[in-house]
Length: 212
Image (cartoon, rainbow, N blue to C red; front, side, top):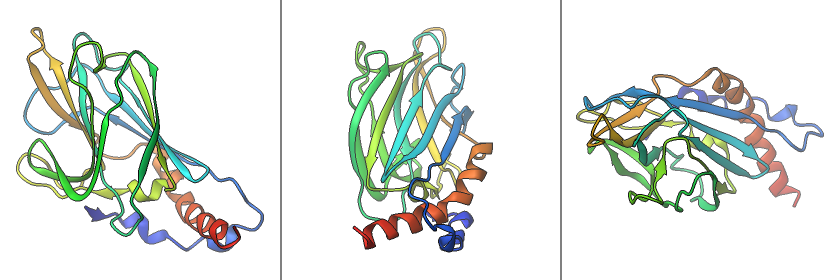
């Protein structure tokens, strides 16, 4: 992964904590830019990271997909200096999505067989348990912050350099035989507000541990 410029803000607002005990932010991405040269799905995938206490809640909504389209996998980046993450609390909030397999490793996973990411979330590809259009899920990552996910991928081949997130979508096209790799060209408007809160979140986490 590559470190984002935004993470250089860490520590700037630590003195603003005072008596604040609960701070939250939301980062939202709409994945709709096909970057591999394959087939573009019918609509975007909405991905949200939200802070909940010491945990981060990942919400993924496939309402933008249609027909036989389904999410095969998701890819994220992670701070190499942070503690390893534990995933828990999976829930299919809409539909019947089977629990995914989550892997974490420094530049261990390829999107489109080229670009390098640190987190891979693999969903079931079987009918009846896969992540289909109009379904939604949540997944909890324990004892971490959104700041740890705001890192860029290392590109290669068809995968461009500097992606926050990517998704592999199957079942595209009239016969459902096509697939594509989608991302977002830039973070949403919500990320700007979230980045302003990152230093506070980090300092709050440290303060809680020091006073536990």
